[in-house]
Every structure is written in C-alpha cells, then in structure tokens.
Length: 370
Image 1 (cartoon, rainbow, N blue to C red):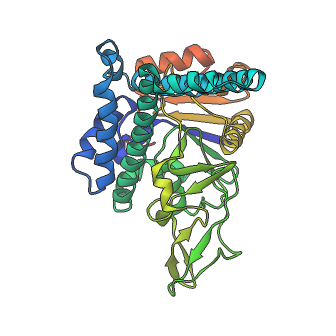
Image 2 (image 1 turned 180 degrees about the vertical axis):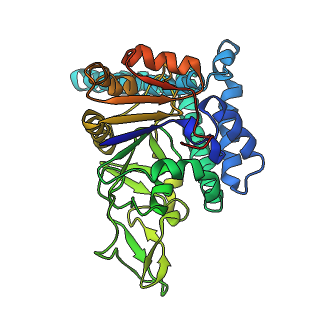
C-alpha cells in the first residue's frame, strides 16, 4: 500500500500559495475578486486586526501566519471558557441564595471592556475563516479551467492503485479533483466517510445518485478539513453551487450536478470546517476524528510513504504525533519514507522526527515527477 502526503508546497504549481504567503494572497485577492463577500469578510477581519492594542500589533501582523491565527483562536477559547465558568457560578449562586446579585455580576462581565475585546476577536476570527473559505472557493472556480497546470500532480496520482491513499493538510481540492478526472475518486465516499448526495437532472428534478455511481478506490484524507465544508452536529455539509459543482458526473450521457440536501445558503456565514495553521487546533468533530483515524490506519499499513511539499511546521503538533509511529517502521525497514522537498530545513525536521533511514530528495512537485 502506498500513501502520498501533500502539503501546501504540492499545490504551488497550480497557483496556490505557501502557508507563509496565505494571508497576503487572501488580502491581494480580496481587492480584485468577483466574490464581493470576500472583500467584505477580509475588511471585517482587518477591522479587528487594526483595532488590537499596540502591544499586540507585532502578533497580528507577524510574518508567521501560525502566530497571527493563534491569537484570535486563543481569545475565542478564552471567551468560551470564561463565559461558561462565570455562567455556572452565577446560576449556582442564584439557586443557593435566590438574589439578583449574580445576574447583575454576569451582566457587568459581559459589558466589560475586556469581554468586549474577546467578542471582537471571536467575530474577527469568524470573518477571517469566511474570507479564507471564499478565497479558496474563488480559486476553485479558476481551477476548472486550469487542469493542464496540474500536470505534475496528475502524473504523481495516476500511479496510485486501489487501496492507496492521499493524506493532505491542504484546504484546496487539487488532489481529489485530479483523482476524479482519473476515475479514481468520488465525493460519495472518497473523503473517508459516507455522504448522501443527490443529482439534479437536466429537467431540474432532484433524485438519488445512481447505484452505478463510481466509488473511490483511492481515498483523500483531509486532516485540516476543506473550504466548502460546513459542520452541523456530527455531519459535514458540502457547499453546492461551487464546491460540489466541480464534481459533476455523467448520468444518461449528460453531466449533472451533485447536491448536498443538507446545505443551506445561511451556511456561508459560519460553521466552516477549516482547521487553521494555528498553534491551537480543534480536532473534535466526529468526521475529522474519522479522517485522522483513517490516516493513522493508512500510514500504519503503508509500504511506501511519499511526502510532497509539507514542511512539518511547529504548529502542527497533532500531525507530528500522527507521523511519529513511522519512525519505528522506517527503522525496521517495514515502510520506505521519501521526503521530496528542496528545503534543507524541511528535510532536517523530517529527519529529526523519523530518523536517518528516511530518503531525502531535493525536488518539488513543480518540476516533472520522474
């Protein structure tokens, strides 16, 4: 069994930015995008960023996006924790003494300047996630016309056989889109979980996906979620108009769009299932747990693992834990791990994690795969 691990560097040849360039590229696209909501969402994030105290400006404008994204994520976690703690205390006090004091204390807390800052952080983060989602949706549209630029990725993925897997830390759809074109993947089960989707016929009639619809001999396991994914309880909902539209399939000789019946337009405003490159990550959603479990199983069964364009950043502690068992498999010769990356620093980080038995190749996916 073979596993291919993809990081941001594996999508650069298709026009996507490295993680270190992400926020600058989103800001640049927000000024020119035909998606009007992208500019609005980004400006609302900038409103929070620019309104931060002077002491935090070196954080929110840091050249490391992991640091920038960690601050509002931490502030949101602080708000949720403090809100819950103070509310429990107020309820307990009111039940014990039956007085108005606890309610007034809680009102004063929510009206305080410090709590207002946490509120603005939560709102700012929500708008930033919305901007990121729209940026990748916008890019997704142009991807439909740029299949030739994915030539290196196509040549890499066409080698995969049934039972192989792609483990990706990217939000874009270059991997699954390419596998779809190769006839090796479907959104019905290709992400490591089952999805109930419908098709809309030429007569604008919605119906079940035909029983003959293609399954996914190759899985794409997206550890950090994806643009176009929204969470609702234990389910993942797919955005219809743009995200799923790229995965149309032929029915009765015609291309027909796939639909997620659970998705609604209101989802554009929140509930994005994007795990940001911050030092704090929430990986508790059931579908994400299934994805991480599938990735662990795949890596634990692989004879060969090839890593393309993933720099193993410090913020990805969970990913390091996921890959760490490969160290023993490399030592015993059970699994061959090859790191394809032109960065000496990246190769050093992988060598420190997995040992000296890893094969290091000074190459990137931007060049032809031999």
